[in-house]
Length: 110
Length: 123
Image (cartoon, rainbow over all chains, first blue to last red; front, top):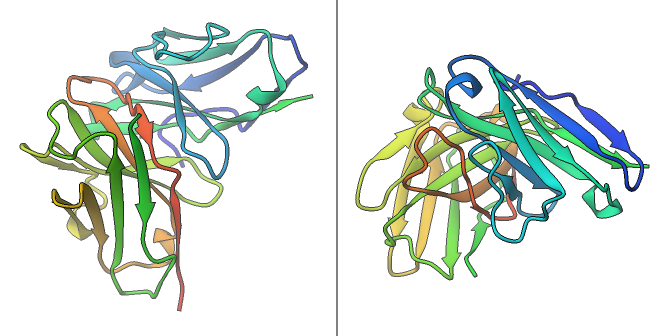
């Protein structure tokens, strides 16, 4: 069971805006920065968002991150077929004194 | 362009040790400014941090795995390695190596990952 909680699945149609949520606690999301990763099975996970809302160079601005209290969200606007992937949230946990991850959300583009 | 590549046996017998290597290209394990990490994903589950280290500094372990984990670096081959002892079926997972910036306090900014390698623990 993952420390951070994500819905196992989400879906949307091309062009739509979808939001993926990540829930934690005061010792992790509540007091630290959240990252988001995109993962296609068999490939290297890709960093999409760090420090709650920052995008690495090369990540389209269709991807945006936010955090409020002990929850965080990843929003994908203008959904495209190539966005179909697994998405994971992550942050630091002060109790573990290490990074923790969510269980992942499988996004399907209908 | 920095790339990481995991390698190692895909099948390990219970009670034996699992040994994996991460080969770095486009950067160096001795380069300041980065932690080098191992992370795993059990089948159908989320990700789990195992260990990370700073080449000229300290090593940090997941407390649940610390007693079984050894990490080392081979600067001549620009590699770092994971050894997990006394494995059981519960250690069956895809193992990833990843890089994290040194100044990433309070974050989980793993900016470069390998593709992962599946290790099955079975007799």
